[in-house]
Image (cartoon, rainbow, N blue to C red; front, side):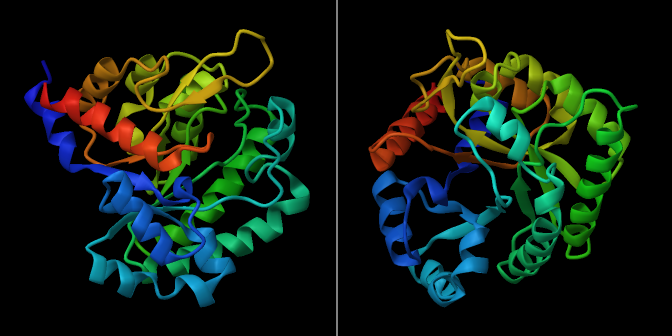
Length: 282
């Protein structure tokens, strides 16, 4: 049976807009409605790269009863083809893309403020595990610069989980000490990257969690390769235990359903939402 605390999550469900692969706000609205969502985490790259298409989104959302609850942005040059390629190219780690990423983050912070968002997440990249390593200090300085762009506009910056263990992420956040840097927790990423049990990880970093991606996965059977992303309820995330851990951590942010694979995005997202809603109502 769902606890009284967990049941409150039924009002915190949203969808990741990019999962619906919509080329414009009208299509996004249609696909959200088909999947049964009224709240969305926006892909803010669209507003930076295609303002002529996406600047109309707030008016359309208001007319359609859609509420934008948070945002996401990507970094330049990411290559997700293998675990090794994303380790090299992911986030703000590579020197060759740093200046472009910083400039993009500045535009994104302005757009997020204009859209009324108070939480924006991104992948920082693979965090070094050793605080004494030169790469640790360099990445901390870069995250700090981006975080302060968002802090100046009253926005919390969420670092997505998965590319490091929960213990390494906690060490990094404690060292960083930026009050507006938080965690966007993705349980599937912990499994996809092979970085530990999502429930145990929530207990490790729970006080920093301000956003959640509702995504599922199965761990790989071939070490050094990706796990398999699946629709929520079809993978190896222990959803009752995960929700209970979030409740114990006092989580009160948005829980955004994400689907990044397959050709049944609307159906998979709707199925996942219905699965979670049944758990919350049990």
